[in-house]
Length: 172
View: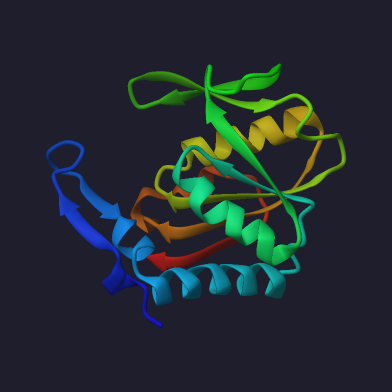
């Protein structure tokens, strides 16, 4: 199944000159959504990526990370923006184009040695995925790989990521 026709292009969002790849049209299509999760799980299994936990970044990573964790027999752990988690957290700050941001995970969510896969809807510059990898490493976990529905190749985000397998389903 070709997923590209299920991904809507929205020009000039969130600002002029940006072509936004909108996955809400993929999410609303039952067959497309099922195929996306099944294909992502298949590619993870083919790459021998058997994590203890799948981490999804706020918020679209939650949409794909949770069903992927289910299919792989793993747990799911959300990584959120600063101030969104109620218990004690590990945090990592990272650079944005204009300023910094912070990602957090509950301190009791991960233990050193846990095997982790990081999942998000899209990789562009790789900043958020790289920051999440640093958070995983800070806790002492083993990063097995990444999974993305969409990769924007021209932005070379995978070059900013650790040298582990990267699974993508659609490339632009």
